[in-house]
Image (cartoon, rainbow, N blue to C red; front, side, top):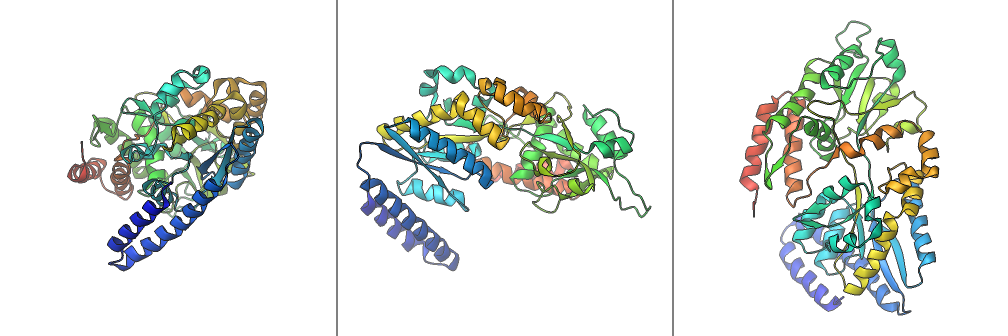
Length: 439
């Protein structure tokens, strides 16, 4: 790494930023990160032992899952004499640190992050395409095929899946039984009727003590993510030919369904941007909640089960996939990084990782292994998420996804607060038309 060049770039950048208070704050953050990178680069230079030392940045949480990952990294290091991987946890804010490293020509060798940032990384020239390597890899056939589609853009594969998961609906069986519900809902209409039956106003004050389902209020990614299974089930999309398309019939139908649940009075809203919290479900104030196998519900003492997302036009859910990029460094380091990625995709890694964390294995042999089958038999709700893997769709990974998600999130939030779905999506589409770059 050319430290003199990087220092010159930062000095040039700082002269542009120092004109305002908020820019000065950003400058201080930038310099703090630079000091970290400088120390890291110096550390790399000092190692001259014939072993390729790779840095891997990850933000795996909670800490118990991070421990599982780090133990697996240690196993890799113990079995490889030519390559050693250092797992480095990066806290918040993650993206500014990563982008600063890329701009400063000091990226990690391997990055575990969010596939939705793929397009942005491509624009920066920060990551290596992997399809040529993967096509020669014997274990490619062991990986769930639909997972590759989420990670492809512009004809190239840009990362590998570390884990997968998807959304379902957790429910309280005792509350279902008390309401006389004996069949889980399989369609949107059935879900709507079940939610009505589960909404109970015990004292007649028109303020139910128990609601059928919780919907996530907010405009950030959790809300968009939670709504996506309904979009996909309705045959909708948000991008057509690399251009925003928020006013198609499927998108309108999906948002109208959430609107109908609120109009019925059988759904309640989370606190703003806290739709992932499960307090109301655990306390029995809501009978159903949209979430995934990572949920804290499974660690609580309440009764619970899970059913697939009910269908409209077709059964569907959305993936929650963790991924790994090989960052552009040098050919030698990139080849060494690919050895670690092959290990991550292996049956051995995926079996131990999935049993240790609860995420779903991306390797089919790992999922079919005796150890994992014993694990999943002890947690029958996992089978719902495993069965949904072939049905799971994805969110876009195009460069403009952050802008797209922001506008879509605002439309969902506006609808949950009373706006008509058609108008909310129309406004969001018009906003995007003004700022979108089709390239």
